[in-house]
Image (cartoon, rainbow, N blue to C red; front, side):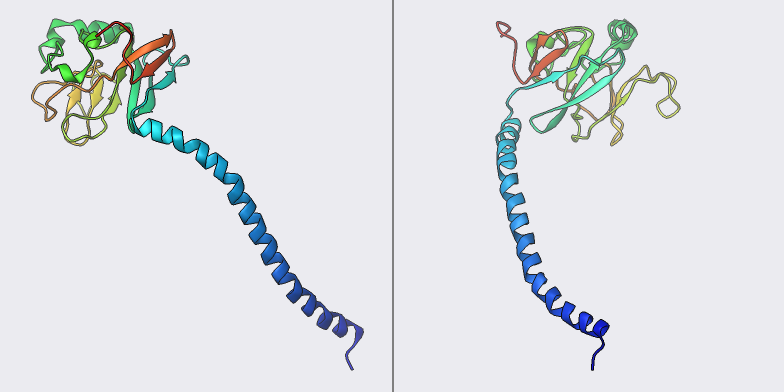
Amino acid sequence: MNSPADQGTLDAAPDADRRKPLTAATGLVGAAGLAAASIPFVASMSPSERTRAGGAPVNVDFARLGPGELLTGEWRGKPVWILHRTMTMLRALESPAHRAKLADPDSRVTNQQPPYARNAFRSIKPEYLVLVPVCTHLGCVPTFRPDVAPADLGPEWPGGFFCPCHGSKFDFAGRVYRNVPAPANLVVPPHHYLTATAVRIGENPERTI
């Protein structure tokens, strides 16, 4: 004869077996509920993703971007940089000695920037550069190298953007240096300012073209 302790153990097994289908059913209902709850969220994200992929304008706020700092956004599935240039950076861009080192200092290749960015700073506001950081050689993303004369780039490096894939160099306006693989300056996208610290990328300002 089984002891009371043994009887309790034997009786517990059928209860556990009965609970398994109930637990499984509960889990399925919970998963279905989670999936149903997720559908509106996913659907609400889809138009935004399609809009971004289709090239619709995007707004970027850079109120916290300090001098010498770089912010990364996204437009058309590509990164977009906003650089808050210092006065030292700006002065260097206009130097005749610096310009002589560039392949296209006057932005003569017109499809690399809108008409209103064909200036020494390639921008609407000199202190802010809006740039698509995709190397014009083979599409790598350059690195931001504001340091002057680092060991790996040599004593003549004044700061700028360096492509680690094949060694192309660009200045703080995205202009390409001579004798590097990249054939053209980095692209300045269409853009205009909504406020002093917010820019709309992918849309030209009114009455400029």
